[in-house]
Image (cartoon, rainbow, N blue to C red; front, side):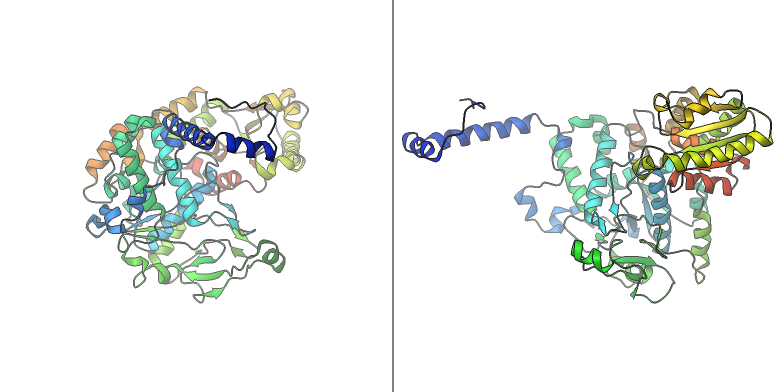
Length: 510
């Protein structure tokens, strides 16, 4: 039986007649619907299923039965997990906060991968419209599984050099892949080897581990404590003010009425709330949602830990994580491009023109660059060398200031990097071979898991490293730097320049 989609709709009387004349009509419809449903399931990739759907039998099990691996204690080791999101600069900011929180709470940090740009979004803290911690943990888990299956997994520790922090014992860390393979008993080598064709039993194991780590079933005694506080209700502090006091930034009355918000933001000491003596302290894993923060209206959106005068160890860590450099492979590639390809004093221009709010501020973005270039052109030799870092493709330069610069070769010489350029490709290969994210072991007995992950879960596709090399080149710009106002990329470059990355000797490998 087939449906005629061009048929006119029957009126109520016609339906009554048909019901009297054909009592098996609805039974036929039901059978066709069931057949269509099973056909859909049979031809839908595993990755598109709701990863946390479980059978009613599994749902009715007690947590201790549903998650038998919760009994695993890693010989008393305790861990901190969180859900990174947004672009790389935001993910790096969260990574620093995670290092700080893990050290304060004396937990081993589970180092996440670098997520695709905006694959996971938080929302807006100032507008009190964000994903809940549970929702964002679920989104991050789903994306990480996708990265593993597609052979694109790159650890944050493959990109950012945390070896000085580890060697000084200021923080302990374990790779996310190694952690879940040990904690959940997952054969990640099978996940990585089979890609999207994972057997059903493995898919069930992934669902179960993701459900547990995301806090779908809430807190599980001595196994997992899921932190449900987020930037709508909490500003985490440490040795700073009265625990539980109201924060200076609260939702205004108009927003409360419009969004029906009843939130009150309080300042809470993270050590008192989640450290020794707390309910969270006994859990093997402490799972946060987002750890992103930024200044807003005289306060911080989520984490306000700028100093720790009563704790010299944490005070030292705060100073060290202000600047976390890229790994040596990235730094070398950026320095070589500046020294060998540009080979002259140059200005770096970071122009963010397409993403988010920036697409509406071209005039202001170009104005700052124009003024800087005019002063350089009048005060020095020509042409002025410019390293251009922009998200606007050259095909779209027609009719704007960038096209004027490109044409004026007598006064300006432009340099660019693209993903397909040889220096970038060669560096990506070196980075993939180095596998620095697996070159540390803070947890006893994890070497076997590290070896398996290294063998089966190394990236099949070269990582996208263009941004990191461009930022390093910009740190070497001796004629100055012009960045886009409000861009987190510009802020990262300013920090690199502040700490003199380009003048530092290349760091040694592990």
